[in-house]
Every structure is written in C-alpha cells, then in structure tokens.
Image (cartoon, rainbow, N blue to C red; front, side):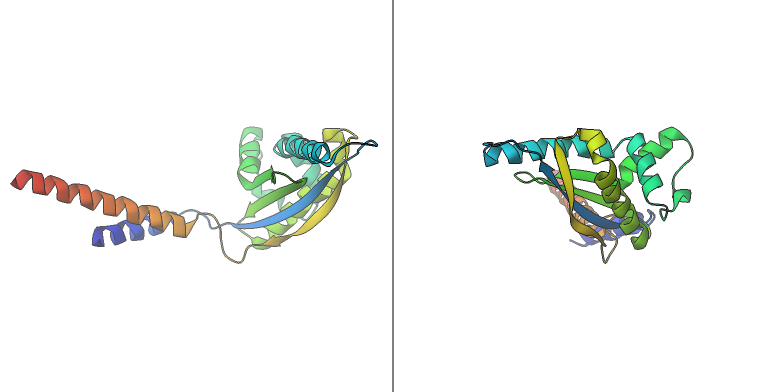
Length: 186
C-alpha cells in the first residue's frame, strides 16, 4: 500500500514538470439547409456529417491562419515559426468533435493562460461563423451555442488521473514483488 502512495507521489511530481494548461470549450450549432419533406433523422445525420467535416478542417494550417486573422488578441508568440512545429502545436492545443445525435460542434482550446484559452476558442468560433461555408459548402449555416468558458483549474496534465495511475502502478509492482518473495520461500 505504501509503495502505491510512493507511485502516486512520483507521478504527481513528474506531472508538475509539464506546463499546467487550462481549457476553454465553445459550441456551435451546425444547421443544415433542408429541402421540403426531409425527415428529421436525415437532417440530424446531415448536420453531424457537416460538423465532422468542419472538425477536420479546424485542424488544418489554413484554418489556423484564418483564426489568427479573425482574432488579433491571440498571443502569436506562443506559436512556433517553423511550419511543422506550428501544426503540431495547433493540433495539440485545439480539439473539436461533434456530439452524436446532434448538430453541436464542440471546440476545446488549451493554454497556460485561461484568458488565452478563451480567446483561442472564440477565434475558432468566429472563424466558423465567418468562413464555415467555405469549408463545408453552402449546405449549412452556423449559430453560436455556447460562448467559451475557461476551466477553473488546470486540466493538463491531469494530476488526479496521473496520481491514480502512479498509485496503481506502485500497488501492482508491490504485489508482484510480494508474490515473488513468497515463491522464493516456498
């Protein structure tokens, strides 16, 4: 048991060497243009598909360029200048997905500064509102569902999860050690 707590302590200490990041999540409704007589199931599936396409577009360098144009308050010094590192940084700090069964596209931005996380999420939302049609065609319109709100506490690294994993790893390691000690004495 005490080895489990040692594992927990080590995992949390190691996690603290990584920068603490806050998140901000925003939501945008994807509203498909529908013809007369289209059933609701088809409409929802259409909005899901359009949202999935848009979620993929959010991860591109072109979309990042648009976000930086639309939202001048974003701290661009945080972005690397080399294109490969810039893309990696963008993909690491922006996540997007569509809630199944709805037309709701959720975007989560991460930053060491909670205010920058909110600004980054706002930039993504604004870019979708202004340029979303260019990425998915005129088959949909967009509406802000949720303005971004920053998390109260850092979410990366996940200290409780890392602590739990460290505790379990220590406990398993101690159990294996005890089992081998018993086998030696038998």
